[in-house]
Image (cartoon, rainbow, N blue to C red; front, side, top):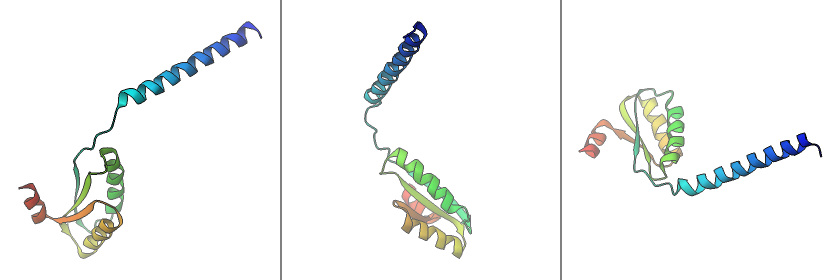
Length: 109
């Protein structure tokens, strides 16, 4: 092999070793992820056409917080169609509930 090939191989080996050390150090230093007790709330009104997209987005965020995090859809003036959508989403997704404003106030107090 020529000197250039040896240099390229040495460079690639050094990059590989650095990447391996970086990976192992990241795993060791990250530690365990702790559960964050949280309730993600959506206040909705009207027909709530975009509600499913919002719930899907919060469902992804919920997985980063931990499995104990919940999503609450707060009815701030939903129509019958909007309430039906919210109820369907609460049955489809785990840890999603639909609350009225009064129920939310009772929980906060």
